[in-house]
Length: 222
Image 1: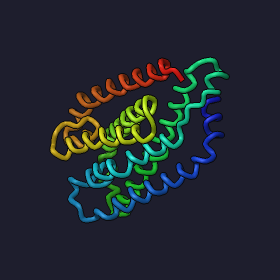
Image 2: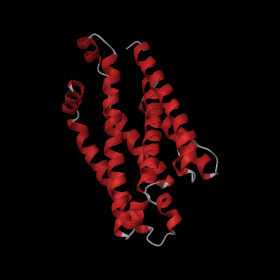
Image 3: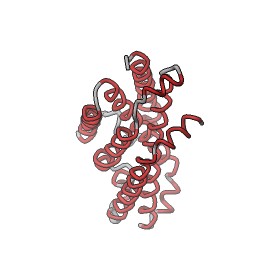
């Protein structure tokens, strides 16, 4: 709780960007869903809440920018606590905030747009599938942010953003060309394959990335 309170008090300058990002993403998700009013039912999710183009061009870049703008390594925090663990805890907080202020408005905006289109009854029938795929989307965003965090620790903000964006673009390109892409496999038609194969692979990748980022934090000579 101390970390959350400390970082929240230090986030005065960034809160307006959290708010603006949330409003932009809410509006983008809602307007996009309304715009595909005449889409076939089989393509509803792919064109709205799981639109790979908007995830690639809007959602993930917004998350990376929020993380890079908010996360700062403060040497005095290490000196005060006597441990570098404080840096990891602060990073955890900013990862959570970047995901929270983007994924919640995105989901709410898309669902609002779909309900305005009159798709509510159908959405109730596939709510379980939506939740599973949205959880996968959230985990893939977390993996991208962890990669961005690692490059931020070893280089600078510019290279961190470019590295995360390029890797995300490679995954996007693989998915567009109908290959397994890991980060964009929330679009796989077979939900069972997603649960039994892709989920474990993504979780293993996240655990590896967490280990690497933590190792860099504790290894780095500040």
